[in-house]
Length: 181
Image (cartoon, rainbow, N blue to C red; front, top):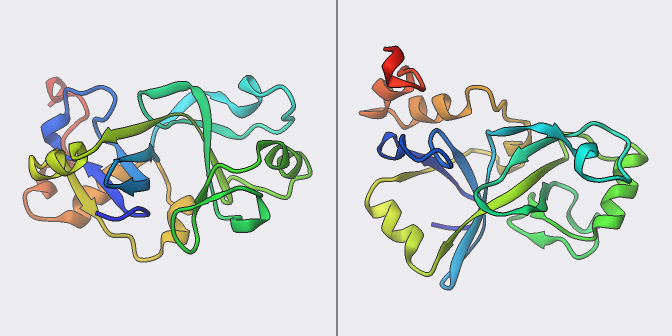
């Protein structure tokens, strides 16, 4: 599993509120552990609710259950944002936040360029590999990583399940709450 790849929660973790029906981008994947962000779960807040200096209403996403009091961000701006961490050729995370605020307020960044998260998802050494072997997650290939920011979140998990095919096709149409079936 490489950073910049997506992993999709399988139905085996339906009972896990944090990760059920999640699609996660791995921002960092090293021997020491992995960090990712849930791409398809918006919070009920906007960025200007948690950052005073922002005057534009960017959506705020739930990145995962770890460090929920911290703000993270994925972007396509590369070296334009100083101190960004490269994920792959077209995606980066974090960087100089004061510069990000400036770009947002000058309307030089749109929601297609940057996505903000409260919290992240992380795994210790060997943990993600174990969860992949247990089939809690399925790797998911996206043709163009730069399009990750443009993907619609409403049916992202379902579309990934359909694309995975096989036994996952059945789960793609299952209601979120099996009691509603």
